[in-house]
Amino acid sequence: MRNLFVIGNGFDLAHNMKTGFNHFRDYLSTNYSILHNYAPYVPETITGHHGEELQDTTEVVGLIAYLLDEAAADTGKENDWSKIEDLLGKLNLPECFDNVEPQYDKEGDRNYSWEYENAESICGNMALAIPYITELLSEWIHTIEISVSPIKRFSKMINPRKDLFLTFNYTQTLEKLYGCAAENVCHIHGIASDDSCFQTDKLILGHCGQIDYLNNKEVPYDMGDGLQAIYESLRKNTSEQIMLHEDFFKKINCEEIDKIYSFGFAFADVDLPYMRKLCNSIDTKNITWWLNTHSGIQECKRHMEILRSCGFQGAFCTYSID
Image (cartoon, rainbow, N blue to C red):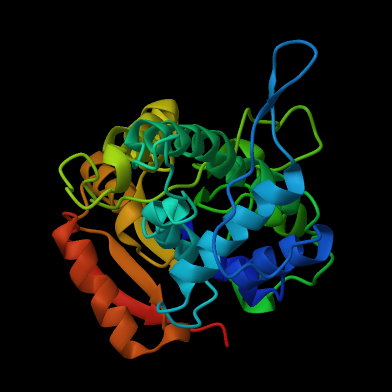
């Protein structure tokens, strides 16, 4: 028998690793000269010598930091990584048009066509700047060191050469700290590694929000199409990730698994397609899902309800490593 472990960012945080949203935000402030803006400033785009589109990196980071801070203002102080993905679906993109000033022609009449051109330019600049957050994520993740000690109780729970691990983390904590076999670890959202054997094209993050800019008459300057394109560029394509890692889910189906443990996984809406895929990949009737009580019994009960909605038919138990 093998066990399956579902690992989220709370796992790294339990090791006192600085992998939370607040740590990412601190990294931006420390490494870039971000000014405290009271309104979003969208950086202009220039054309480089080879025809490439260029923007001032500090200004790009400033815009991203502003939008994240504004979105985070009313979401509480939780530091789990799922927070930033939730924030990506709540960015106040229309606010970026607040600086479009009224334009007048020589006769003093309002020139709406000029204003539209300015708004269109801003939207294009936003489309280039905002997705840069994935580059910042990769840059930050590569600075995180795994210079911590293993959790003894977790070490006793796992068989690092035999058990399977579905991890939503970008770090190699499982491989480097616990000696887990790389072929048994699925980094569903990519892995940050200096080892070319583990390198991936990009790290995956995104939201699952439902904002409709296309049919929103309050969007300034009829920029619904442009804002929707930006919004969709920040969406997490879970279907694509499931397809890319289909071999791992087939591997789960071929193994005799009787226990699933989740550790530090928030069961956020954006990641539930993976849970549904997992529950559809194996017969869960005789499987026990073990939930970590670190966040409290009520949170465990909420996770149980979510798993039932995803198709899990087995039993539940709880465990603690505190």
